[in-house]
Image 1 (cartoon, rainbow, N blue to C red):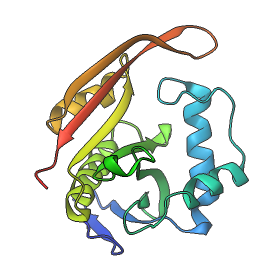
Image 2: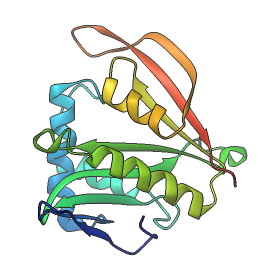
Image 3: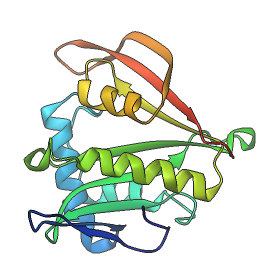
Length: 182
């Protein structure tokens, strides 16, 4: 897969070109649009109201240094179709070798393998950076993300019933981790 600060690109037999690359300022509109789609549809974020461009910019810039906490986008035929990040797990120094990751795919591109590509990229990047453990928080009824956690060998280490109120209902949250061998 991709090395940090390089571009991963592949062309499939159907002629589609998939690129994973570092997010740039010019991607902020797409990152905001895709994230807000997840907020409105529900099931993949605990935010209840859409975020504005400045809030998403602040989120991207909070991933510092970027060579340790990258934010990437995935493009399909030149169109941003999703984004992903490695984030600081906890501010206390004793947790510095653990990273939390997240990923979001535009609903127009769901079920096309982009989530799988992003999680694979995140796991490989976390290994290259030297993290010891990767964690991910997933709503328990999110079958797609739960399947990805199993596919990549993550283990569920926690389950918090009725942890999140999305406005209409209470959602259970599952906590997943993977030892990276570092």
